[in-house]
Length: 426
Ligand code: PLP
Image 1 (tube, rainbow, N blue to C red):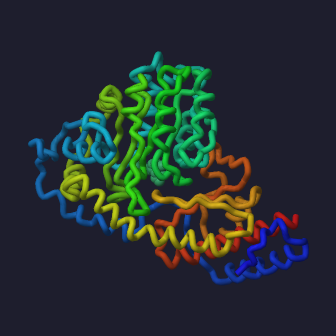
Image 2 (image 1 turned 45 degrees about the vertical axis):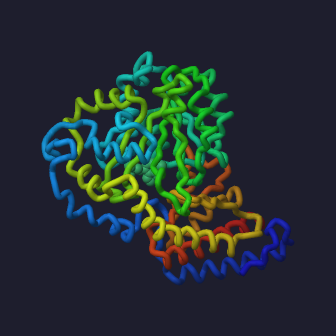
Image 3 (image 1 turned 120 degrees about the vertical axis):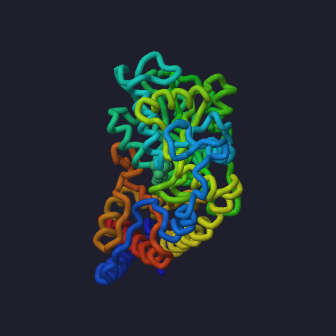
């Protein structure tokens, strides 16, 4: 157990002996031959088991409104399933479309349509603009950033605050620069920092003047229902806020059941104003006659009601909360009071965001790899993989079993301590 005197207040010889202790602990770890992985926010097998009732469904192939789900058609998805998730996401049924298995695919589709055709409020396709830029709250979701990079969209980072993205910074950026066409936002239990965007911040983002007439908020509510406590935090109502402030087509919402039922065989949703949803279908319809409605029906029957979804999420919480508590326990016991690390205490979502001594994140990740513990590559949560302070590490404890979370976190904290001592002695 390390003494809880901040490392920066220790003498050189105290630091040297601290480093030697950590080096010995690290050498032991390497010798113990761990093989653990905290890289991706995947549901565990136990979580997937919760949804195995799906495998015996649907018991009917006819939708509640009398449509044969086996046939072509119904581009917007099964209406009753849209209605179920519209209620959960605070939308009207016409403001939500149910599609395939991946919301990330829908994000790529929406960007592609904007790029090739422009949105309902665009003067021209985005691809015909000289330059397109996006505001990216950081740390954020790596796949959001790599998707923009693929489009050649330039990324402008803004910090996340406890209330969501720094709204002053965003408002200042978008006010005079028409090349800034949009922003990412994971409003509830952000990946990886866990913050919930408040109604006030959402209102500011919905109403702020933007130089681009077709500015879009990509409102990726991947963790809308993924609470780690009994409190069912509600997401801000961005669609209504945007409508009342005169920018009804600004938000495009995304969500999915990837971390509710099956990550590889769930249902993904895209939403926004009715015009936005119609625009989406008009573009989608060139390449699809309809989504997998049998899967929609299966999900509809499995849950029964919106409350059925909430009840199901309680079962996920029972499996996930102990893993997050274990991460918190080990970080506190091993790193608390040493002045070399801070971390988030998420009330939902899939991640803990750990900030280690600036300059040491890549070393920690390298050390962990050497000890058989895979961590998300350094800089992943930043555009262009550039963490300017080399400080952030995303921890994803959902997939390993609890005992593996313990082993992996004990290894991680040893690496954090060793890297900090090395740096302070350098
Ligand atoms: N959005 C965020 C913020 C995520 O963290 C993830 C998965 O980790 C996704 C989207 C992927 O969603 P889907 O499985 O629906 O493609």
